[in-house]
Image 1 (cartoon, helix red, strand yellow):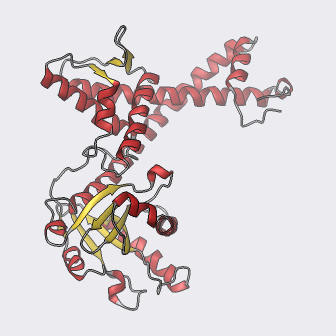
Image 2 (image 1 turned 135 degrees about the vertical axis):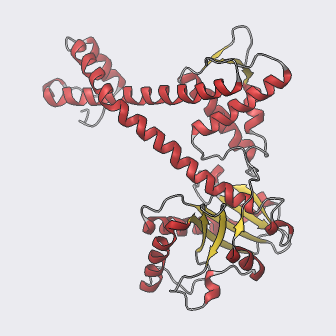
Image 3 (image 1 turned 120 degrees about the vertical axis):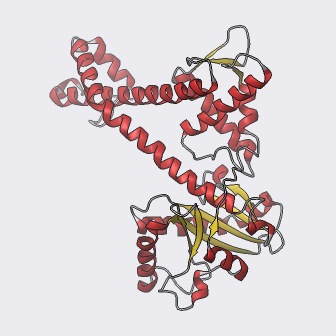
Length: 372
């Protein structure tokens, strides 16, 4: 028997084809109007949260980029974003490596700390996954990993709350403060020119060095604070919001089309794959696999949302169904259309489900048939 919380497409179609079909359609439209504003706000918040997170990742990446002091003086370099993602393991956001010392630093970025206990638990679970996959990561790096450190990076104003919970857990014995792998904390102060700093006042640890990096020179640089310059290394990250990924892909297509003096809105699936599978755009050691997933999602979602259409007679070629004659206008309209169409689809799905559930509740005797 179909449960009250379920809603199949067949069931909806049966109701729409029944005598109640007209009233069901009316009720769906009413619910859509009720949900529209709330879902639009939710979508905006999701994009904003993803943007805040990506900003933290950008800062960590840039602090270890080819022009950074950490690289030029100490040999630490950003290697990959989101290691182990290709295995289906949601892990740390940034992998930093020092080829000379064979030392790795894994960084988890958290733009908000609504539940510090969960964030700490998640980080320690991620540590375990990295350790379990050490050999695999060495194969991907093409080099040995001798030592590892783990960091959680958060906005400076969130630091005290996280550290208090970290201290409570270490004092209570929930976390062994004598363990070899203790979570370190970086903080980003956005009010002083994007400064990345090592937080060292974790009072539950009996020795100050347990809150510091094993490399004293790195500790000194980070304790003083790194002023991160606007050094853009990565176009997009695998877990960025799909809209942000789409904007980067569309911008690349438009700019290249303008340079080549060809119609702005026409592109091939090959051009999308080339962008997404480039290590300079998706900085991941498995960039081909990750990039293929991103390009497939972009094309599939763009079709589903009515943002692109196939060009007749030209296999593998598409055209943006977006108004505008300039790159700026097309990009702006792409973002607006994506949000509008995505939210409309979501609202429609939720409204249909709710209307069917309401009808079930009012007429339970009609829902005693077997469902799939």
